[in-house]
Amino acid sequence: MTVVATITMATVSLRVAGTYMEGVRTVQGMGDLLDGPAAEPYTGEADPEKGLGIFAQNCASCHQLDGAGSVGLAPSIRNRDFLALASDRFIKYTVNKGRPGTAMVARPDLSHEDLTHIIGYLRDLEVENPVDVSVDWRHKVAGDPESGELLFGQFCASCHGEHGEGYVSGGSGPGIGLPGFLSIASDDYIMKTLRHGRSGTPMKSFLGARGLANLSEQDGADIIAFLRRNPREALRYAENAPIKAARAPNAVDGEKLFRANCSSCHQLGGTGLPGLAPSIRNRDFLAIASDNFIRATVAQGRPGTAMVPRSDLTGSAMSHIIEYLRSLPVANPVELALQPDRKCEGSPENGQVLFSHFCASCHGPNGEGYSVGGSGPGIGLPGFLSVASDDYIYQTIKQGRIGTPMKPFMGSRGLANLNDSEVNDLIVYLRSLQKVTS
Image 1 (spheres, helix red, strand yellow):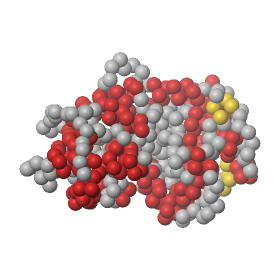
Image 2 (cartoon, helix red, strand yellow; image 1 turned 180 degrees about the vertical axis):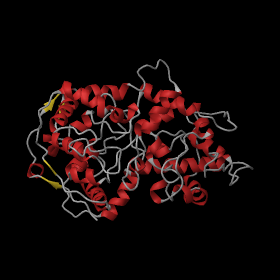
Image 3 (spheres, one colour; image 1 turned 90 degrees about the vertical axis):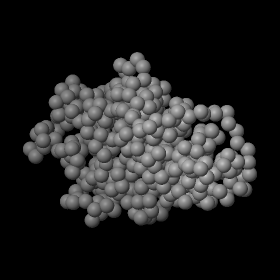
Image 4 (cartoon, helix red, strand yellow; image 1 turned 60 degrees about the vertical axis):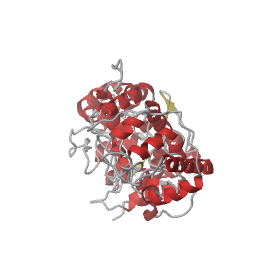
């Protein structure tokens, strides 16, 4: 059963200039603001099967493979009410621009065609009792923000946070007070959400006799007026609240930030998920990886993988996350004699032979990693090689990763009994891949 959203002509012909409120662009400019690859026209039909593959690689880590979402991290986007209310343009713009203050980072790398297929997949998912709702994307309501603040505090804040900041406050609802949401959600979209709720989620209907709170249309307008009054306040809270009181890096704040930003891929506790994300609470990783290595990886991301750049996680936020990771208990901790200045020399040709024998089965024939179905990450990709030192790779081959499929490969206790010269050849071969792709 396919859900098809009904939208008004205001949506179809939406090309008027945007307006501003508290420095936040409203939905009226949405049609003209898609930039990057997503702005390129695509006139083909949506292919749900292709969409599934693209969704699985880029979206499922947070929103789950069936789009059902994960409470406290990402909302349901296969929900019948969301799909009935959200236009294709709304979804594309959200993906393209992201949601500042949340784990939803901007994805301008996903093309218009990619997004069309993703939406085709979402709209092809079966839902119970589909609804047909019309949304006017230019409709505005008049409300009293003071009255709306009281209503929001009574009926909405427990899930969405006191300022509408969302998951960072520990609630089950997304950041509906943040500029990233309010810049594209019309008043009518929010009002219809209050009326219909989100079937199968904690978001219930709040308007009318069948609503959880029996709110009136005017009550809904007042809540919307409150949300639109100062969305920057919610963003400031979302960005600063978890770490505002911290004077030094601490594991408590780090765990909160990790849960909100990292656990969807790396799992709670950082144990990782083969085929998606490596273990980062592993004793060997933590012994080898410097704080700067972790910072650079998060900031730059890993192109070609689900690890997108998170330049928003900087400074004290990353200090807290690193402190949390290093506070996790591990069995039999190790101390290694690292050589950060190590520079390997060897034969890339011999390294390629060794790589095909011992590494390709997990990491892919050219180190592509998970994208080719391997159980190991993309160690041949520029995103890894640009931040991993020769010593980091050397120590990883020597030590392995306890508790993961990555075993030691050097010496008499290694899986392949490789010597120093052979490991040097492997590293030189990996570096040659970096030069080819750069």
